[in-house]
Image 1 (cartoon, rainbow, N blue to C red):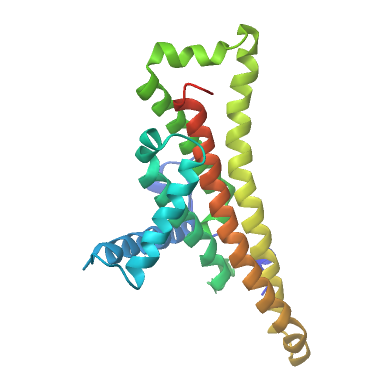
Image 2: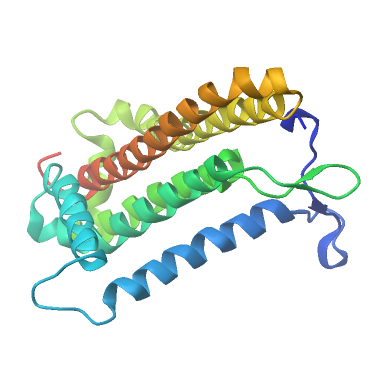
Length: 245
């Protein structure tokens, strides 16, 4: 079944409010992604050992990986504040990306699409991007002071203020749409290959190998996109909290 023919399951007029609609697939998949991240976090902190091995060793490698991203953008004394944020963003985005690689499930008479990557929806990726930009301003004011931080918008020349405001909107759009575009395109191709593979024996023989190869490539893309999102998050935060920017 071609995903292009699927419709998102919607809860229209939610709570009796005419203009309030919920995409139930997004709600379900965000819950599943969040639950997986929570379970991994709990599992990683149970029975911790002085000399790590197994899953604890992997999680310590992941923490060092995020530390490296932060350290490449700002002083660690300042950047250590953002380690939980970077780790959570990376885990949530990567797992969300992988959910769509696993499979797409269709249920209901109208072939409603329930199972997909949460990050294959622009509303979710733009919300994540907006959160990052808002946090960058929050920590800029918190760590540098409101008066000193406000001066950054008129330095080195006051007439640059409109351009810096536009830059904030462009950062939000590029951060969110980059992630959405890559994950959505990958899901579409995987779904088309699955549909071809299940159409006939000849389609199965012709589509299975490309589908497996593309799923492996999509896993790599999912990792890279999570890495890029966290890297750009730290770049934006560094620009706001570091006085040398």
